[in-house]
Length: 68
Image (cartoon, helix red, strand yellow):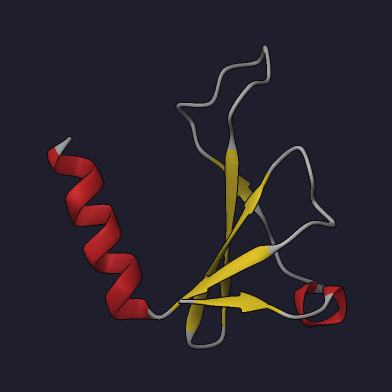
């Protein structure tokens, strides 16, 4: 896992918020598919830090999250 280093590396990406996120705000994250990585950021701070996960790490995360 790495932190994406600059906003220019995020330009032109399509960010998606979880369908489980409520309309009232709160603790939400967004994800975007980048070449060879999935990027994750706080939806309330789009200019803030971004985590970069490789495909295997992302798949393992999703699998664990689905288990609860």
